[in-house]
Structures are given as C-alpha cells and as structure tokens.
Image 1 (cartoon, one colour):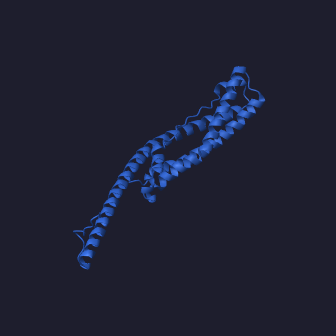
Image 2 (spheres, rainbow, N blue to C red; image 1 turned 90 degrees about the vertical axis):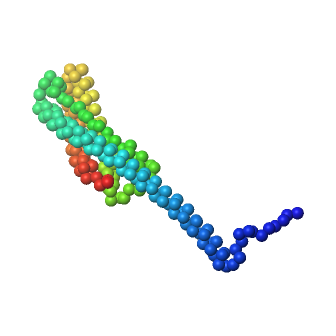
Image 3 (tube, one colour; image 1 turned 45 degrees about the horizontal axis):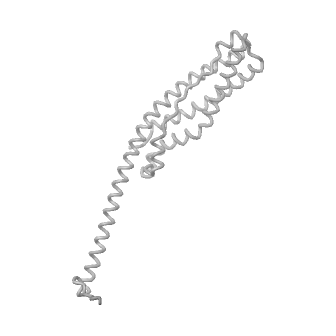
Length: 209
C-alpha cells in the first residue's frame, strides 16, 4: 500500500505560489543568461583568434604577391626579347641560345582564411572588416585559370625550344608556334600583373582590427 504525503514546501497561498513560480523563472533566466554570456565570450575569443591568424597570413601574402609581381615584370621583359628574336629572322644558331621561357610564382597562403570559413569564426567578424581580405582570396581563385594558361604557354614554349635545340634547328612551324605562345604568354602576364596590383592594394588596406 502506497502512502501519499503532502509536500512539505507546498504553497499555502496564491502569494507563495507566485513567489515560487517567480523564483523558478528567475533561475531559468539566470541560467540562460550565463549560457549566452559564456557563448558570447567564446565567440569573441574565436573571432579574435581568427583575426590574428588571418592578419599574419595577410602579411605573408603581401610579401608573396610583391615578389610575384617583380618576377612578372622580369618575365615580361624576357618575353619581349623572345618576341624580338623570333621576329628578327636571325639564324637558328643566334636565336635558340637566347630564347628563355622561365617563370616563377609562389602560391599565396589561404589556410587561416579557409579554416575561419569552415569553423564559422569568419561569420563572427563584421563584414565591414573583411571586405578587402575577401576580395583578395576570392579574386585569387577567379584568376587561377589565367595563371594556369600562362604557365602552360611558358612550359609549352620551353618544350619546343628544348626539342629544337636538340635537333639543332628551329623549323618554320616551331617558330610560328613560339611566336603565338610568346604573344599569348605576354597577354596572360599583363592580366595577372593588373589583377595582382589590386590584390596588393586590398592586402595593404585590410580593415581587420
């Protein structure tokens, strides 16, 4: 047989009942408030870490982009010389040793930016502070096909020059191919240099605090 006892703390009046309910509600509000405060502090910490990581990455990328631009200038000058040589109709013995299609490009870092996007910490940073950084990373992806086309032009030209050097002669077909590849490479070089100038400005003007 089960004995049922009255609750010792049962409210004896409406006043006590409402006080009891208010105490429960207040306790819940405090618990929710503390949880939100902890989450807010965590988000601030997460955002600060993301800012610091991206700022360090931006500083590294600025140095990389400046170095890449210097190489682009030197490569454009060499391509111009190659074009002059090919158009000069000089003998193969004169042209072949001086044709050069070397390129250099260091890939900018994007680990910190990508990680911040994946873990959601990037969304915790005001959009007004990441506009320039977002332009840099987005434009770098968009111009990737132009980089690939440029490197392909240069490497294809190297293959033709290497084969001609081994054969000891530059056929008319080879010369025409090299002319086409050289002009194409010069165009791609100009586009990459133009876009990279804006990318450098974006890195210099980043608003992360």
